[in-house]
Image (tube, rainbow, N blue to C red; front, side, top):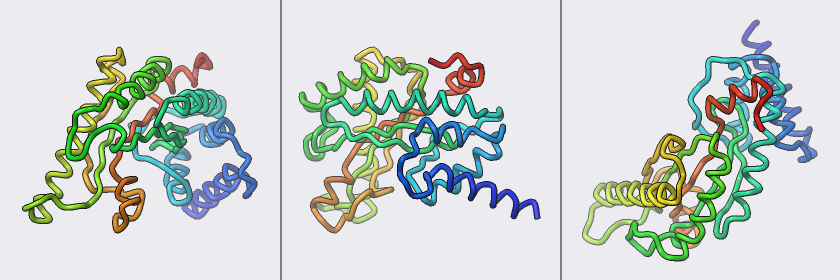
Length: 241
């Protein structure tokens, strides 16, 4: 019976978050709704349910503290502003997603074709210009944790088996993610803000790998900004700016 009640609560909250199909609910409002209920339990339920219906990510260490309605609203406002700032960066594609705690996070994608030449992890000059702009965003929102993920398409390498190609793609994706990290650090972004850097190779395609256009979309580096423990504490205390 308790499981049914919890599932019903999560479903009702999801209906509210989705704006009952109007598409008008802001991330600020979503932050408040996701923080409502006074506990990480509801946040976990909502994170799982929302993950089936909208964009979500496993990023963000599970927290053992309650996230109140007011805290969720403050974090939602903060991430709305971060997304707007990131959207001004040249060549950046910005989305707002839900982190592991059911809180609003920001995903920024850069096409690897813009960042690197084929088969290389050396940043191009135009890429450095975009990343310099993006570094300023990260410094402005220094209380957000950052994760960087590199990806490739599933195309094979010359004279390599499928397994060897997958390994080479994974290695290249990691090298590219590290190149982005190193450049951001060189522009003054704090190393303490960088929580993870991963190369995921062919995993998690966002488009059809059977077409050239889809392959191009899958060759990418994603950077996530999500609420740090310090941000959550400040939001709970009502001091988050």
